[in-house]
Image: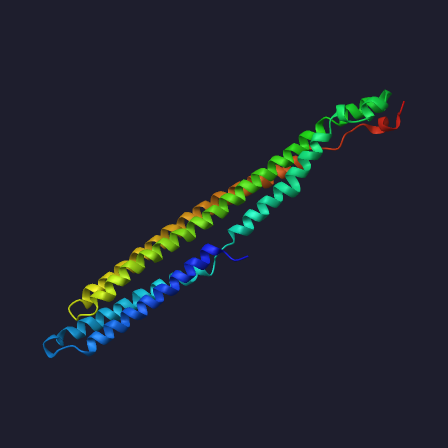
Length: 243
């Protein structure tokens, strides 16, 4: 399943690449028509362009690393829903039927078998309800992780959209030789902002992922505890004493 927000972010990355290509086209076209009195500026501008190229390579490397790990929040939510619908709800329904007042054996059996049955049945709904609670916790945990992934990609989209504004201004400024240094600064500043936002978003997602991992470990421990504490009834041969 494709992450829709990650696709939007990828489209924004492509738009940034087009803006950068447009910027360099404008810079090169402007430098082609440099009048003689301004030619001494070209060496410095070319050095600034080389420096900016390095910043762009850093930006592209960072974005490429991030875009290779899109995640699948929709799938996480789907799995969480499966825990509730296929495990929690089913066991909850079963638990609702495991009461003595809803069983014919409560009135048709007597003697030791009836007493054994009366002792064995009541604890069972508690175990089933415990599993249902775990299923609900699992869905909540997976949904929270999915929301964190969505928040990360939204941050990416906002950052890349912000750069588009800086790039538009830089392209306009690069139409004149004297404006190129400021334009280079605008592009570099925009890239710095984007890299900063991406870095902060990555750290936030990693931090929350660690929290979710702790939650998942706690849930798995609960499942283990249920299996250990929810033991089979110890009634011996009392089941065979029918009347």
